Image (cartoon, rainbow, N blue to C red; front, side):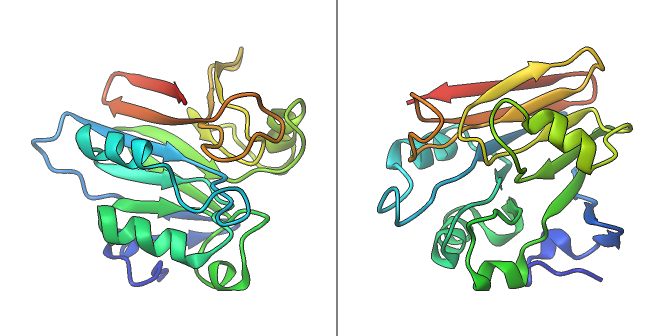
Amino acid sequence: MFKFNNNPYYRHSVKKKEFIMIRPRISLKTSSLLIGLISDTHIPSRAREIPNSILNDFKEKKIDYLIHLGDFTQLKVLTTLQEMFGKDKVIAVLGNMDNHQLKKILPENLELNLFGHKTFITHGTGGPNIIIKRLNKLHDLTDYEVVIFGHVHRPYNERWRDGKLYLCPGTPTDKTFTDVNSYGFLRISKGKIEPEIIYL
């Protein structure tokens, strides 16, 4: 049994090999979910806090879940998001720059299954030009339809020849490897996947 910071969202999760499988609770009345995406906030080294414009956008659009792809660097950033959106609504993975407190509670990889769309969630490793090849080398992504990652700071919204959607929201605070800051959304339903990158 895996419990992420006493987060009830993960109560029925099952540890399998290198990642955690999440079985989210979806109401039978729910036809789609809107997920906010953010990564590599690097607080406080790159910014004092996550820009209010992003948090307000998440609130105004009434996201169902928030996924952070790692490199919080401090636990306080995670707990602030949990207080703002609810512990059961914040999903997160560990980044390579995250401190020892985060290493104790965050998994490196997650598997999320929504409306039959199998999704792999990880921070990632490697430079911007090789990260997708590196992801496929390190993980068996054969059965996944969507791969969401961070680390490279550049936004990605690309469907490759293998049919997989590779999605990275970029970073809202750091200009390393990128000229623009960004975050994202993923609306998902039984028959459709709609990713969106928002540029700041």
